Image (cartoon, rainbow, N blue to C red):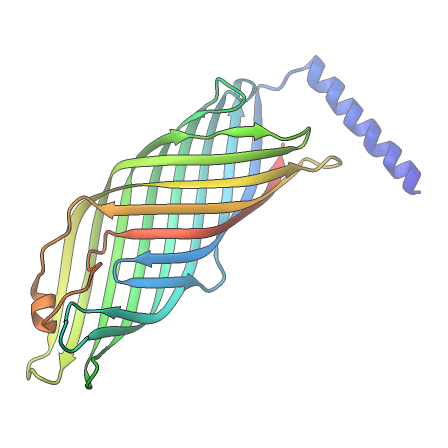
Length: 282
């Protein structure tokens, strides 16, 4: 039975190859699942994923693979426990936080690959974050307050870059992507609620802000195409860094807390870790 099955697979692959030569395909569709697992620092807070970020990726190849249009959606939940120091040299004040955040990303891309080893790509990206953090204010001497910070952020815009591909064998290849974002439009809104022991009045303020962030995202992976079925698997690493063009000045939150944190801007974003994907080509 095993011999009959192997002969059947070989005959199918041979027939598919002959059909491809006789009738070259004008388009090819790839449906894959992409997975990210890594550390994420946004503003004052550093987080790790509960189960990672995952979602579908679709690519349509035209003109023998020279032109590719793609769309992807990723989502994941993050949690974090840690401390962020305030700029308080005397008492070493800090914000101890316990938070949860949801992250979503939509990506649309158009790639032109005149060469086998490299292609140029334009990417439109929309990212959404929702954060809810419980904060304890502490110093070397005492616990002096509690608070809650909530924030919702959206960043959208175009990026441009390269997608190199280095074949390492008949089915093995080294793939990558390097995208530069010259100016993503960002809008953020949130709420600060704090109560400290040295002030009778509590802080409860809503805020809204706009900005432009720039930076880059990159990933590299080793991919392998299975022989018997049209399935590709890959694994590698990724790194993303975005930053506000200019830091916002200290505001009423810093005045109320009598200090400020190093990364108080919500528009500072760093995400890095492990990535994997698997999918079919039709």
